[in-house]
Amino acid sequence: MEDFDLTPSPEIPAQPIKGRGAAGNVAHRFSTDTRQAEDDGWTPAEAPHPKTALHIDHAKSIISRNESPDLAFDLSLNPYRGCEHGCIYCYARPTHAYLGLSPGLDFETRIFAKPDAARLLREELARPGHVCSTIALGTATDAYQPFERQERLSRAVLEVLLETRHPVSVVTKSSLIVRDVDLWADLARQNLGHVAISLTTLNGPLARQLEPRACAPQARLAAMERLATAGVPVSVIVAPLIPGINDHELEKLLGAAKDHGASSAHYTLLRLPYEVAGLFRDWLAWHAPEKAARVMSVLYDLRGERANDPNFGSRMTGLGHFAELLRQRFALACRRLALAPTMPVLDTTRFVPPRAGDERQLSLF
Image (cartoon, rainbow, N blue to C red; front, side):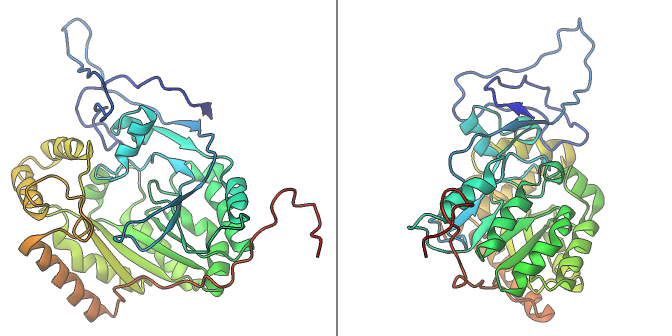
């Protein structure tokens, strides 16, 4: 693990890189200059193979507060910054710009771990002003991305939440979550835990192109079944739906999830905020050139003639006739499969604040 530095990664030619989502580093919104690699004919071009580096994020707080009416949670917690899964469509990619890094390859190759996450969580839960509300684990990253296997930050956070009986929900596309099935089962028995598994496609080759380092769709379904068998309420989130790429799989994805233990479902439409729009266009040009123009045309129609619609009420599901068709298909499929269209409500009345300060200090009463 390395200390964080602000040295930007070098630009990489825009060509597909095996095992990576972005083809290179794009300038972020705060950049004052741009760079582009050119072949001068003197040095033979070599395919880049960027390695993933883990840095330390010396965070001073760990709980973020959300005021968006589009989201079903008020509090969120991210044990990491960036995500090695490399999903090309990830709406969280622009967050790396705040670190002076690119939302492109930097987002998936320069991961920041918060080793003090559990301690910071304990301190924030102990504050007199804390109001118990479900914490969403991993909203701008995947809490169970590959580095979690060695860092175990998400598990440490879950242990604090279980100890304090604080409700928690997670969205992940990693089968690594089954490592913590014991904690999730304990939380679920007290109506304090809920897991949502994100499914984008059942097509293996397409999954490897869209989300190159996430686990395979069948592994996610197996994780879903393992959690459901342990008594954990499991939801499926079909996300993102991309017109012309995976929207035809909506009913199949919901059916597969139901067969593997899902009890509720949700979906979101592709969002292309800030630099993600350019990254996704590059991805289309390489992986689906024959569909690129049509896909972007429909997306612009769904987003009010722009790449991204930031407005509450429409940014998750889109506008217009195509968005309404998706809504109806989802509703009909959920009704047929007996999938609840809403997430379970967790218990916020059991919360017991931890003692602030030294845990060895006995309480006065």
